[in-house]
Length: 122
Image 1 (cartoon, rainbow, N blue to C red):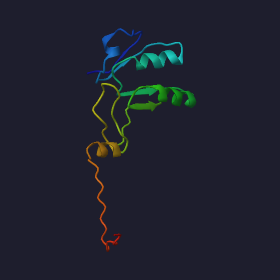
Image 2 (image 1 turned 135 degrees about the vertical axis):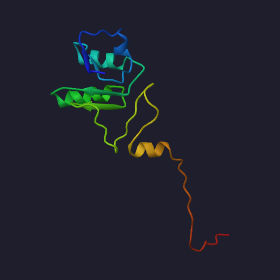
Image 3 (image 1 turned 135 degrees about the horizontal axis):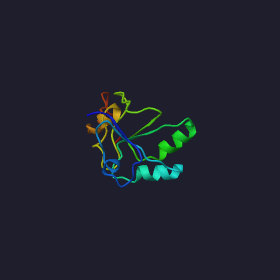
Image 4 (image 1 turned 60 degrees about the vertical axis):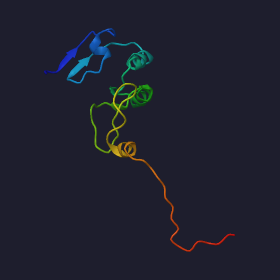
């Protein structure tokens, strides 16, 4: 599939509201930061997102408010194996990569064994 950029999109368009696993970008304009965050979070999905801006303070503020498992700042789809990857809401199942994936598939048990003499306390 060839990459495609769709401009002048609306919130009611299906490819804007659904998770599209392909080279597609939908462009929507916004007036305020709150509007952009509210619209981005107004979905049942939350796999990943990105914030592109020159204002690093704004980027972190917005990233913290986005309901997504991964948020890239001025980049997209960088997934090193040591960094957990997975979504919020109805996106993904648990976490892949990193220590979180190991913990997801691990049942933790603690066994303490005294290999020395047992003190008599009675």
